[in-house]
Length: 484
Ligand code: NDP
Image (cartoon, rainbow, N blue to C red; front, side):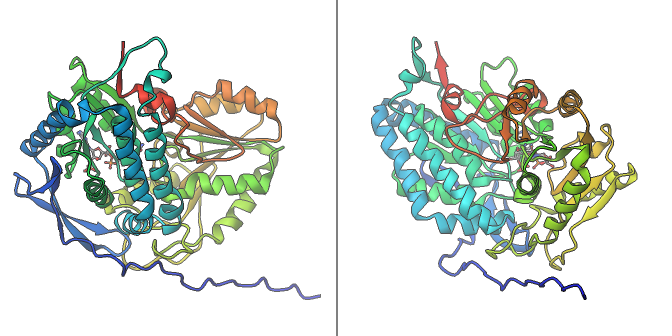
């Protein structure tokens, strides 16, 4: 009997509309509750990485601009914000959360246009989680003494915060919500390639009528970030980004008395035992590495598969990769959007070359890529040595390095053999194995039979070169308080 040909499903395009709002042509700095032109006189363009078209012109803050922002933050701290009862502060933070929910669609569309991530993710993950962070920390604002019994928690003062481009709005909310709930004021620097949703958040903060200067947003590149971090009147520095820049910041703040939290890179092990529900695990692998184009510090970029199920897992993984939709971030069917920038694409391509040169066997999903913009096919490597660079270094793209193991001790050793320690995943039917591994893996977050799940109540942060300090949950409050 002739074999039946499998159905070739084609999804009809489902583009999200972007006609209901208009971005401004030019965005200024948000300082002291007002939009001010940069003293630097300079601007840069932010572009859509999916089509390389310019979205807006953005002000570039220099040291003098950052100084003005810190002064405005100090004035607000010593003035209205510092004097306000915590229960009143909470109302403003709730207002931000509710306004964010009201404007969720607008934020999601702009996030996808500016950063390249699929609208499915910005709509269902980034924006709702950002609102959830503001709700969660608004709830804490007037209960902080209960979180630290026997202590006398007081705010630190002005917080300087520098965030990356992979979750622009969500990282802004991770930084702002606990800082404000604890009574601090803020100067925030978004990443150069993704400033727009932070600027929309500034508009929203104006609408929420926060006192002037409580939140200041200074846009620019690395030099602007350095000016924020090194400003002498900043009491707290919170940074999320690369380990290289994290080390620079640690050096430059040493001895300054500034409280510092660093959320840096990762190279998470995702471990699949033979007794796991394999189909479910394959979905977890896909979500672990291809979510947000792999631009995720806690991405499951190292896959360890128990040898007896290696072939089955790889076969199912390749099959699943074929059905991933890569393309227009604003199409609701899209699973994998554009790579955030030309620079990041060239970093990823460099690692693909290295992986092949190191004898890795490369497989890429056979999808068409748009002709304009920055794109990378979902990729996996087989035959990867533990010492291979693609198994050791953070690629920050949709690239998975696969290895096998035979015993629990072996996989624990392999998983911990990395300079990083941010996250890990374990897939097994046996609760005892989960408890055994979670106590031995050196990672700040360990997911069991799931991956990349985030919640504002749950602390997040790393060991070793993945940084220190925790964001989220009660732990996240401690980073913004004097606890004497
Ligand atoms: P960076 O660490 O350079 O960027 C993170 C933030 O820090 C950005 O806002 C950046 O500004 C700012 N910054 C850059 N230099 C300084 C400085 N000297 N002082 C203070 N702030 C500074 O990451 P990249 O964007 O360059 O990405 C490079 C690699 O870093 C990626 O390939 C990835 O491996 C890793 N990365 C990891 C992240 C994580 O969450 N773990 C997030 C982002 C990147 P600007 O963007 O304007 O340069």
